[in-house]
Length: 342
Picture 1 (tube, helix red, strand yellow):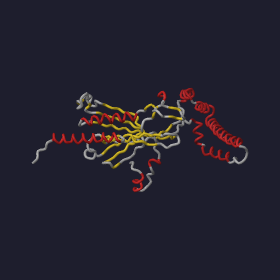
Picture 2 (spheres, rainbow, N blue to C red; picture 1 turned 90 degrees about the vertical axis):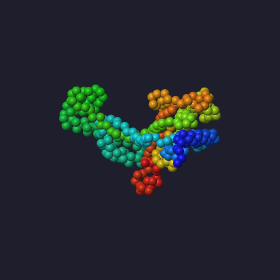
Picture 3 (cartoon, rainbow, N blue to C red; picture 1 turned 45 degrees about the vertical axis):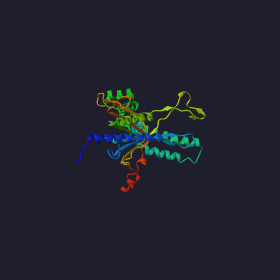
Picture 4 (cartoon, rainbow, N blue to C red; picture 1 turned 180 degrees about the vertical axis):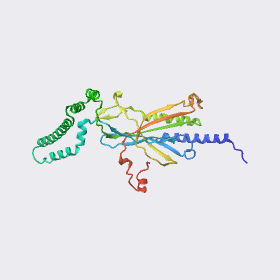
């Protein structure tokens, strides 16, 4: 029975990883960088991955289409948690008494507008506008008059005084009302849709290098993210309307964009990410709360941390709408064919 030699297997595995790393680096010199961690065979030890594709948008002139140029592909192991959050923004304005009455009488006000527009075939444009605004003014006057009249009829001068205090509003009117009656003004709030927020995505990666090549790969991955997150000064030859923008470092060249994909042995699974920008990078070189470094195998090389934790925060550059999500009112087969996001 053969004797199992763990040291020999580890040495063989290290040689294989080193060869793969060197091959990847050689390929990166000829094409856009394609870098992976760990550098071992991605389909043997780690089958689920997050793939970050970095690309630059180039437009040579205002009359030409954007050109997408691939800059790098970074493949990392799947994180422990994977969350996607959706947000909608709503305002809560105070309509006040008059605003609430306008909303309540929206139907009659709409009819008044229709009556005003019904005369659009006669008279000048100025006369038509005058009819429209006069109709609105009359309707608001009617609403206000009815409210004041109702208040007076209901309780005489005392209730009318309360109504006028409520109409006054502001800190003086509210304070006076609270002191005299022990009541508070109803602000008549409403909920108004404003829009959807740009989605944010956060990922945390913990790197523990096994061989020296992996320490160098970690360093390169961190530098790639930092490089493509930041702007540069407009380069030579960048012009707008005949003006050289590279003069004086007064203009930035925008950072690159990111596409995020999830894969299982190269087959993409959940794909619920839109084009992103990288907003924040946090790198912890001592996540165990004490210094732990290994000596470099290169002459004059600096020690490398035994463990590195990197946090990435992305923000999408386009909002999510029903058109992006796709209708849920379809058959199961149609849903599968329409989109791959859960």
